[in-house]
Length: 478
Image (tube, rainbow, N blue to C red; front, top):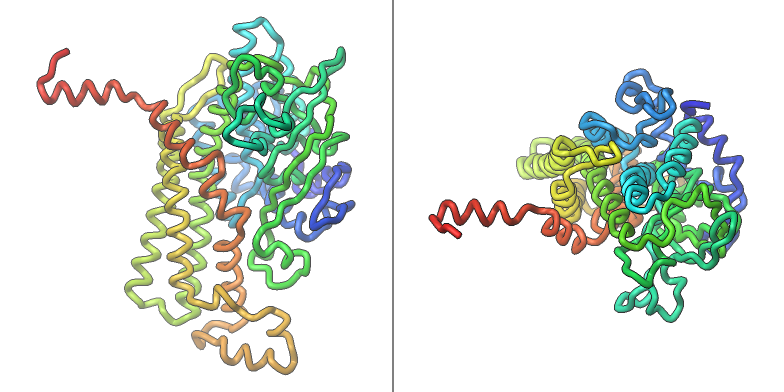
């Protein structure tokens, strides 16, 4: 089929029949549910921009695997240029949708699997890499979107997977059959699982001998029997259901918990099964590559925040206020630092034995630590500039009310040049970007906890060369 248009992508989701629950009710129509559709539209932007002539050369590339044009989100990087393009695409899309576009994690899984399945096969003579490449061809030929099932619920975190009172706290293999495996467990924080055609599952942590049942990687369609999506709550989510007071009128983010209730996976879709020593590799490659992506998309989101702050300065009549300009500059330099760090991680990338190019993990994790702190500061600065109505603006329904509406519009008027309706809309957008918990909390925990980012930096850094440099300057000879 080749590259899909956005319209074809939307229609392809209509053909899926996933099991979905939200707000205590079964959801039969995923695509036209207003809460979920806003997230689907965000992923749809990755298809929409691939159609646009001005962006096609950036987002579309030629596959060496199927010798056809493909969307880069289904392309494990094969060069430094591919790594750099990913960051640029993410910034473009982050600016476009102002929230998560929900397709990065699928590519992160493809990268992790392209590297690790090759390494497992070299050690054990398995055929995981062939299975993976067949699956990758399927993704590329049909321009499918994938979701990453990585984060297990983990139960009692003081206990390992085998020590849990209920082993299902970590997704694991409960049966091996001639034709495949049966798995049970749950993956949480599954951003955009209903915007995706495929769910790719990886282990959530390093494993050791005796934990073979948890060392499993595979892919299944998102509507596979036994896969249950339970959509998580997020700040402001019922506004989308009500069609009222929505700040970002086009896009949003949702993140289900996905339950695997005795799900059958055929062998041709199993990419790791019991090789415990490679679980850590899958986690490390996935998480480092995902952390690199954030420097692009979050820089794009800050671009939107800067635009909102500047617009509010115009609407509020504070364009010439010096300390507001200084705050905007502070927001801009945070965006550029994130972006620059992710670009540096790309330019310092290297080829792996499989041929896939991988980023510099130290720079990628440095970018993510910076994001966790500086996105919050950029948000604070945006709100500071905008003013207090971000917190308690009356409802659109009040503004439309024949009695109180005209009075509210009278008293909410700012600059004479700015229509009051526009000022109200911009307050709503700022509220959404600041308070959409499904997105803002990912600034801290997306791709792993801040502690994990710090540990990775220390583990991957060449500390010995730094020691040697200091001793040389001090005149110390060992």
